[in-house]
Amino acid sequence: MSGRLQDKIAIITGAGRGIGAATARAFAGAGAVVVIAERDKDTGSAMAAELAELGARSLFLETDVADIRAAEAAAQAALAAFGRIDVLVNNAGINVFHEPLETTEAEWKRCFAVDLEGVWHMCKAVLPAMLSQGGGSIVNIASSHSTTIIPDTFPYPVAKHGLLGLTRALGIQYAARGVRVNAVSPGYIETDLARDYWNTFPDPVAEKQKVYDLHPPRRIGRPEEVAMTALFLASDEAPFINATSIAIDGGRSVLYHD
Ligand code: NAI
Image (tube, rainbow, N blue to C red; front, side, top):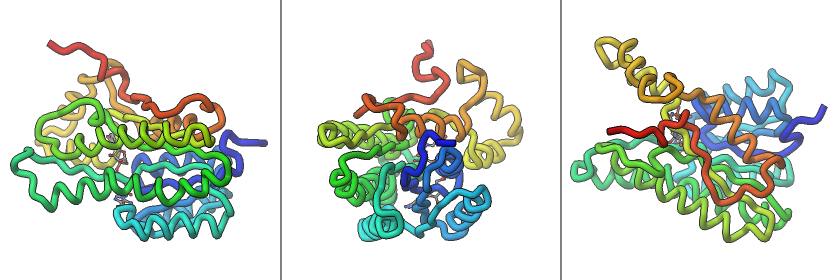
């Protein structure tokens, strides 16, 4: 049987856990060969072992996307192993949340190094191969913070707004050469990060319910729901979708608040 990403070579950054791990599982299930570009050796190799157990082909490359040479080395290693790169999912990202004037230079740089420059490093590393093959699909994991601002989350939304700009610029630049560049913008997603945060409150269950109630479906998103959308955009089912972003937030960004 042929999968929706059958035999496509897909690099997924930060695939060791959370949304990246869900994306790796979904892509492998759809027939892709998954290259796990993850900076955490333990989670990255555990994910490769998990995919191997499912009978999927995969490769773990210890990669810090903030380092341009490491990004280039990952792309070269994927090409050496599989001969082409069809898909890049730029998922690796970090939360850096501060009051603007209390943001140190180091924190500003740490945020941009991963959330924006890391994406550019990976795009720059894979685009020559995609262009010489005659096509490819890049999916950037942006955020609700790419279009809205929550006070005291600085500078994360600045980097995530920039990520949409990068998506649009590259999508337009290379469209005529078969490369599509899109983003997904998840809202609140139930990952370990969210659960750990709720557990810092005296009543974690009440805190979780409060967050659920902010969303029209009275729940938050699941990593698998982000993965499904990334899979669609990466696949040949979305050939005319380019330079745009799909919100995955249960409609929260549309809901009117007074
Ligand atoms: P997470 O923290 O659970 O996983 C991130 C993964 O990326 C980890 O495995 C980490 O080791 C890896 N990583 C971090 N920096 C890296 C680097 N420099 N090089 C390579 N790998 C690196 O995060 P989560 O929640 O799964 O988020 C994934 C993406 O989704 C991020 O870009 C985040 O901004 C975005 N996002 C998450 C939302 C959420 O509610 N969880 C909502 C909206 C966007």
